[in-house]
Image (cartoon, helix red, strand yellow):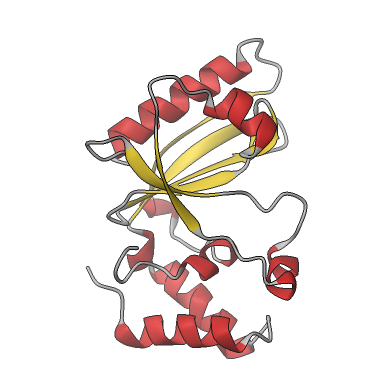
Length: 177
């Protein structure tokens, strides 16, 4: 869908971008009585200010793995792909969304979102004391992501020729700025 973007099959495996690429984020404590409300507001404010949504409020969404690890996904050949979605007028990503397919339960998200132009990556996750979201600029241009992908293909940790071929081909073409 996005020419020269980080290969979709690699994104769940590589979180090696540099701290300086993180340009926004927030954390809401689980003890906050308005946890879901504050997560939804924080997500929307960050998504709009970061440029995640296009003029039609569309973006790419990668659904969470649930309880499987990335390595188990590779073995099961259940790799995640980006889904093009549109934010409707009525939405509840951190409440009903996280309780159904975008996390563990309301207020406990676990998903990745990418702008259609590959310029912004938003990650929502649960942590020890709270849940939060952070934004990353240009993940396909991150030297940390590139090093992580090179290591994955060199070490052949997944023993998956298709994965290695896809990522190696992308690395040889070189990310576009």
